[in-house]
Length: 85
Image (tube, rainbow, N blue to C red):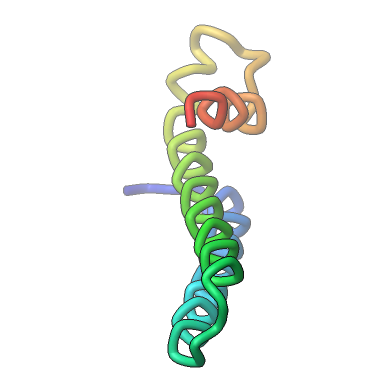
């Protein structure tokens, strides 16, 4: 996969943040924290992963879509994908 490094920097940041959140979830379970807190953090991890995936899809499809709609940028494309989630 040939991805633009500038486009992937925010994706990598999001994935690293999700990695930290997942580590926190594991730690919370090990420490016996309450279910509400665990589920809240787990939802944050899930959302971060979804958004990273949508950003990758938006970046890779941007070139194809621009042929049909030159005004469509990555942010609008990502928003379009998020509307499906």
